[in-house]
Length: 323
Image (cartoon, rainbow, N blue to C red):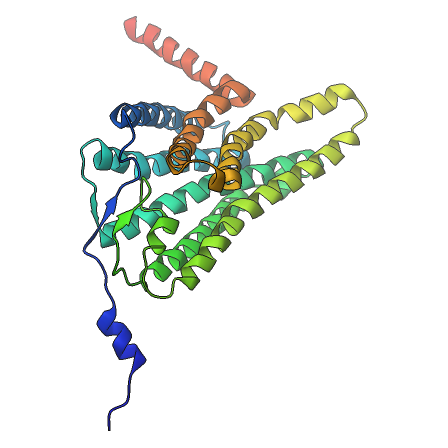
């Protein structure tokens, strides 16, 4: 007598496609010009972030915990842009729309991990500003290089574990209907919705992931600035308040640049045209890495002083070499 084995049936009907087709920008007029525009922004963001990292490495004065987080942010910007933009250029400018199953999952993992880490680096910087303003006399004891490195490593651990679970749940899906991904990369939502078996676990993680890696970090940052505002209200003179607030301007600019477009896209995403949503998301992925180094060079006094010192040393070395 034979018994029905559901697991055996599931294995028989399980379909893992050889490839997916990325279709996000298909049908958009003059899309090649837009892809070239993305490439130009990518080059500038690469140069800018490499410049910031080089200045931090060369200047021994920029060794504080704040600049550990700034270096981590610049490095993440370089890696996230490099993980996304060259592949998008290859797909849409050179018409290589087919992407293998394993490559698609790897693309998904690295893009989401690095884009999420951009957000969590801002959390590390907000923690640094909170400690610096609320505990100015004990800041160097409470926030050291080692503390900041541990914090950033912990944030990386959270991101990697979250995305391993996310991608792992996609691997249990069977794709027996369509292999066309309606996005400009291997986006999690458009991929798991193609599954023809139970997509509930992926749907749940699709809801939890933005909460863990976007909304909770944003809530933490807002909470830190509420605490900072309270601490500033206790400072007796206006001049000292302004001086303390100036140390937060670069970070506040980064938070606005990163979170404002993201929250708008996720907040009204269902009300805008799918093409407009894809364009907005692609710009959101590349504009913060482009602007972050500009903000830190022009709004951070220590980096401006370091840059002037490095230029002066370089010019003096050239004069000596000519002699």
